[in-house]
Length: 239
Ligand code: 6PG
Image 1: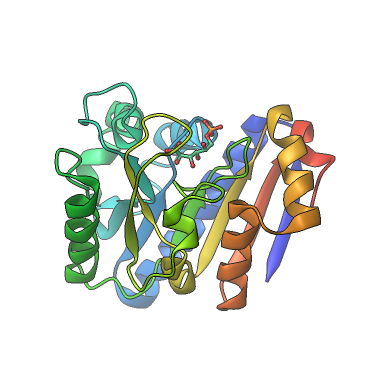
Image 2 (image 1 turned 45 degrees about the vertical axis):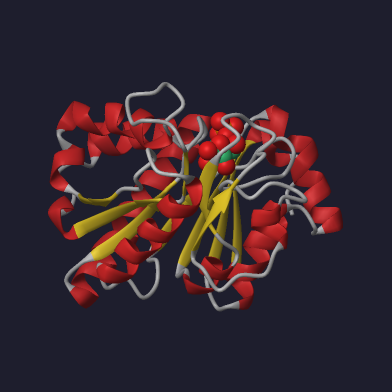
């Protein structure tokens, strides 16, 4: 099922995403005793991370939550381009990062080895499906590190995590959850935020071939919930 929500501002999107995350993770904990949550890189979810740290750090038992990166750039954690590095800086403000369990890719390896090792750690952690996945959108329609026309999106695979090379947004070498992994998602939350995304969102709606549309479609086709969180600046193009 798809749900589309329009919010006035990025701050309201952040509040909605944070409240939704806490509710879903809590539900998973009540059901199974633990929860997992795939984090998005980029700038769009940053306000939501801040919100969680500020207002929700006692809202649930975070030690029962495993966080996973949806994609990562092949740079050290301390590098300014590290997706996880940027999140850790926020989470550490309230020790949230020390509370959660984390599955972290080894970005010092080749993308091929890192992808293989990362996928193995996800399976070893007993993760059969993702409770909650956050993603952003690039102005070219990419999401995660699945870029239009790139092998990582186009080549069929049974792998959940794939190496990415030649990404048009630098750094060029990355790893990413694959389209295959989209078959195992309970809820996908898409940050559709900012005027710079308006055009690509419109295109995604019309053509349905851009990575963001392909990913949303793959999740929904396989029975997952897809929640688009728009702010006013991006809203004109709602799917
Ligand atoms: C990455 C991200 C990528 C990101 C989009 C949107 O590693 O680059 O995971 O998919 O979500 O590029 O980025 P912004 O939110 O910064 O616009």
